[in-house]
Amino acid sequence: MSRRTGSREESLLWRTDQLSDALDVGGAELNPERAQAGEDLVAKVRQRWALKGSRTVVALAGATGSGKSSLFNALAGEDVSSIGVRRPTTSKAAAAIWGASDDASELLDWLGIDKRHHVADDSGTLDGLILVDLPDFDSTEVAHREEADRILERSDVFVWVTDPQKYADARLHNEYLAPLQDHDTVMLVVLNQIDRIQDPDGAERIKADLAKLVAADGAGEFDVIGTSARLRDGLAELRGAIGEVVARRNAAEQRLVGDLKGTARGLLQDVGDVDPKLDRKADHKLVLALEHAAGVPVVLDAVQRDYLRQAGDHVGWPFTRWVSALRPDPLRRLRLSESSDRPAITESDVKTALGRSSLPPPSPAARSAVDLATRQVGETAGAGLPPRWADAVAAAATPESTALADSLDQAVMNTPLRARNPMWWQLVNLLQWLLALIAIGGLAWLVVLGALGFLQIDAEVPMYGPLPIPVLMLGGGLLLGILLALGSRAVARVGARRRRQAIEGRLASSVAEVAHEHVSTPVTAVLDRHKQARQQLQAAAK
View (tube, helix red, strand yellow):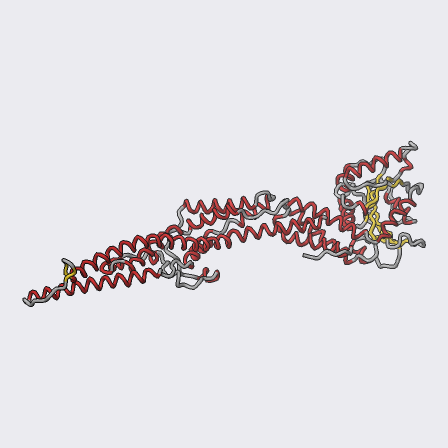
């Protein structure tokens, strides 16, 4: 963003940069006609400022028969602009140039005025003035009206010339004066041909009425200058008023600043009054919908079963652990068993990655929930914005379905679904094998005793109370092992639920990143553009 400084030139160029940047940022979300007008204005400002010099372009504008050409010749001191008996009289603009200190050729070329006349002015009060006589803005000839409008667009000061018959003309007030509410410092209002008013007080009444009409247009408060080109009445006052504007040497800057203010104010209609933000509730609903679409509940069920399977391998009864080997790995069936070992897949890898999970595709209900959630994100974020901005937010909140599905699948595959095994598994496993060895030892002892008995060899059997120790070893080892397995399985169920909760948090974070990448970030980018465009337009309109 350009810095704003105290000098007039930098203030003008600063405003120009603000408007230009706002047009770039706003893009297609701004009204095309107003945006094009803004781009044309930016180009005009830069062209005019490159030609600024010390010249001030003052345009005499008026309707047919207002006598502006006669007034122009009277101010110039000779017949520069031709006056014909058939209307419209002025077909091409003519320029009268005061002073020779600054070459006006390049500026006049930019204005597109070929008819030029240098005025000898010994007083120097109008030095730097370029006075332009325009074709009638209400001419029946389209080319004449277009010529008048073209030069008015590039002039620094407007002198609106009207007469007692047409001073209330709707075309003058609606099409020319009403849009100039920011240009009161570079405007003069002239009531010409006051010599035709018979009533001695009529001229003052009409001037007062004209001033009220101009004020009602929003163009500003003006003391209307009454003139008669034929009798040369009021010429000195008009010349003095023009001289004051020229002497300030800032008319071009004031005119352009007024243009920038008005154009920026018009473009403010295309942005909202506030800066919306993403709604957290809608964003949370989107993450939940994406979790279901990504098959997260299925994955969590598999994680819970996988925990129990691994727990059984470590803390289950050693004599039945082989049964678990016959059961399929729940994560491997989903092609997720290596999630904890696989390196993270980058965004570029996703496009070429061949590996995908075997998760079931989202159901129609899940897809509908995602569509509804993304639409709610767009609607809440775009609430209160003009239609074009709201549509842009809604479009940003609607990701391409295939890319979204791929990202969700990769997010699940990249999420570690296992954690370090609990320490108690190792302790219970050691104890289970100790009990198994005791049972096996007891069984082996009993087999030896049986063999000795078969061979009729007497062997003393140690007793513990009424029971032989080998029987206690076999029965105790088996019973305690089974009880330990049952108790450990109950504890494992608690651990499985905790593992599920932990992995659920991981998967939620992974899915939230996908939502952020495919929905939140694009929506935020549109909202940021809106905020920047609004702030820059407000700055240019101040």
